Image (cartoon, rainbow, N blue to C red):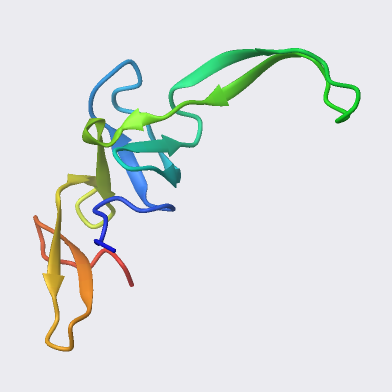
Length: 106
């Protein structure tokens, strides 16, 4: 499996769209989509289902964003940054910040 540039748990900043400038942690990663906590919130109208014990009403829910609209947050520079992938001599791959060369995964 290929190493992803954005992974679950990463701190990101939205760089395009209605939530531009907001920061949050990645909850889930799909192919080209990411779901970020408290970003791209929508109202979902649900019908009650007594068999499952669910209440009806209007729920707030996070929807996915395209991965191209988010950038990973670099805590060293306190800015967004690009991510590169290095292959070590033993064959392991790791992610690093392009601006300062620091490793993303510790």
